[in-house]
Amino acid sequence: MKDLDLQAGTRYGFFTDTSVCIGCKACEVACKEWNQVPGSGFEFTATSYDNTVSLGANTWRHVAFIEQPAIEQPAIQQPAIQQPACEEPACGESVPGAHDFRFLMSSDVCKHCTSAACLEVCPTGAIFTTEFQTIVVQDDICNGCGYCVTACPFGVIERRETDGGAWKCTLCYDRMRGNKMPACAQACPTDSIQFGPLDELRARAERRVEELDSSGVVGARLYGHDEDDGVAGFGAFFLLLDEPEVYGLPPDPVTPTRHLWSMWRTAAAAAGGLAVALAGAFVRSGRG
Amino acid sequence: MDEPVRTYYGRPVLKEPEWTWEVPWYLFSGGLAGASSGLVLAARLTGHTGLADRVRWVAAAGAGASPILLIMDLGRPRRFLNMLRVFKPTSAMSMGSWLLSAYATAAATSAGLAVWGRLPRLHLLFDGAAGLLGLPFATYTAVLLADSSIPVWHEARGQLPFVFGASAGASAGAAGVLVGPAGQRAPARRLALAGAVAELAAHEVMMRRLAELGRPYEEGDGARFATAAKACTAVGAGLLAADRRRRWASVTGASLVLAGSVCERWSVFRAGFQSAADPAYVVASQRRRLAEREVAGEPA
Image (tube, rainbow over all chains, first blue to last red; front, side, top):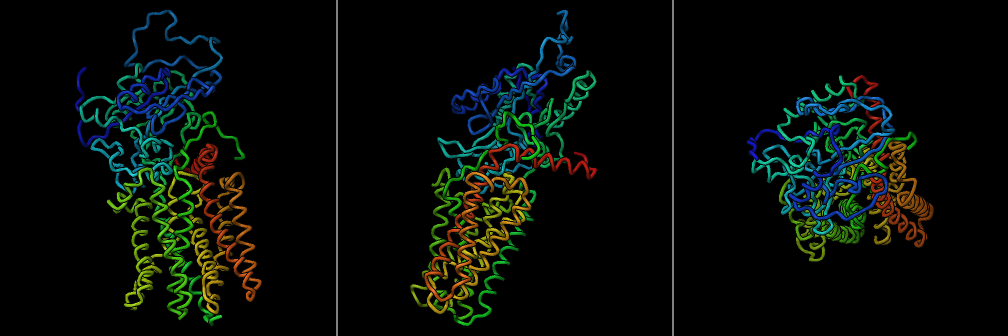
């Protein structure tokens, strides 16, 4: 396995192409193994193959499973560049009526926002931006105030019950420092999780959407690739086949600190109002 | 939510806050202390020294309780000093920690100087510092909640500071009515009345602004505390307004206003949990925003 040659100062991230996710959860397992993330218990949801439920302190990759009525469209192919030679007779052809439903599967992860709410609100400076422009919590600084938990627009970061600190995906900062691919991307058997310089990933993702559109696949869209969105773009963005909320993702996430100055102005006005009320209470200062 | 929204098996998009009972009590104690210090300063400047001397202890108690509550709520309380290792304007909690440190120091020192009885000029200086720092300390906690992704808090960011500021004024006035010496309680009573009326009004404005996002105030714990807050504040204010001579009426009225202020903070606190737990609030409000942007001709 050849080492990567990662450059400090370049922004790296994930492009999760959910159109080729097969729901194997190898990413979840690899993440837990490498990062020594504690077990997250076992909850039998009885709604789908998803018994992981959601991202959290002890779950840094989460594969969502959605079962939907089938739609008329050709079978989804691997990206052209990765496509194996087609030998089986039925390979690449859709089989009408074979299934009356379809699976949507998506491996969710921390978005490593350009404008990261968790980092901005962190009062201790425990959360920082690395030389690869990823967002990481320094566990030895975090005092468990929980402010990042209310700030994250995606419900990603969480306080761990056993140690009281806030935890989330580090984009395998330690592996990156060692010129290794993050564990989930390394383990993904279909290249649904792609790791690389964000610019390259964005260009690749645009091509993939075009490819899917032109092959007649319905509803392919990028989520989080746009630097003009409410969090100034994700470092880990997605190709989805339906609306974000279907996958449990917010359709228009916004970093709350975007409005912080107007909030401070309002609080100052309210404090001023309190001062006026105090002055007013003593205006008729007859001692009655 | 009125329009059905698509969700992932109805699971929350957001995490519920990790905060426990200490936080709503901190919101109350901070408001009570901060506004009380304002009351102390105003009373001193207008010659109501008897009122100032009594209310100063309310401020000191609130200022003493606030950091304890805040530290107890940390996941790792022994690392509370890490709050002061950075000065971070993008974090309301960082700014609040510095404000709390400065304010609590001033309030505690002014109480200490009151006991000591010497250095009257220095005492006035610390009363002044506590009074001036106390007012923003009473309203900053609204920013603490509003600067979050929780719809019922974030979308009320224009109103929440007024709700908290009014509630703080009401509680400080009510405390002044309870502890103030006979003959000097009138300004405290007026402050309690003005605060109570403003609190009821600000909450109502917030509900209108939130529209259907305000539903957490109409069901579950949020509704129970909101109803209790409204009832206590309204009846308490009524008693304070109606009868100035009978002491029992003032005491009951002031106690009810204080209880109303506590319930107000608890209702806001609990509403945040309900708002985070239901993905419909997140999805519906963001979908509406996207639709509005599309109408305005901007790219979605």
